[in-house]
Length: 210
Image (cartoon, rainbow, N blue to C red; front, side):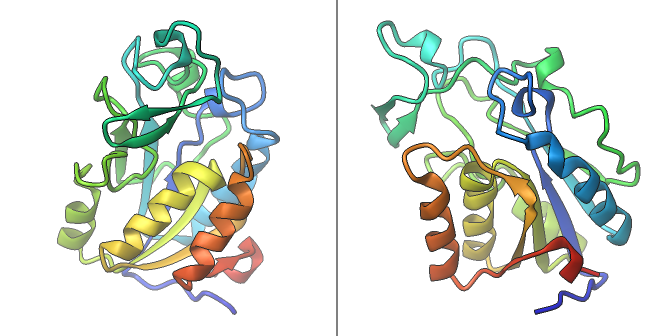
């Protein structure tokens, strides 16, 4: 399948930040490899949105706020299971900044998420309670944008849940899988692929876009 780019398409670049790249506090294996492909994709799209994980210090999703717990353990939060993470993407920190190689100067919006202390935010459309919106859906609708093409980090968390919620909000959705990398916590990569397949969300190679 080839994806021709329309004026009503938007490239959603998810969390290409220093802490998610090698050397960062929550490094996605080979996460920096997406930067070149994401830049190439960005040059093809008229409409681009960048997202940025943006946690306050002491965020409840950090393992450090739960005595006796370790990163990557899962605990029960009021809204359901929550993976505990190393401290990462703390507001204003170098790790929260975009990867220095990311170069999409015409991106129209930087959407920050995860800034509510008591709730994590994987999806770029909803917080992890699946009810608190980020405002992205309304922005895209007001712009007349109808299809979301996703790339970035990490495939099995923020990309996956953003894709699912874009579909839930009524947008067309495509994931550029080779412009993503995953963490793979307890089989989360396979789970992500299965979830996207159930919704008939295509996962394409970057060379098939454009």
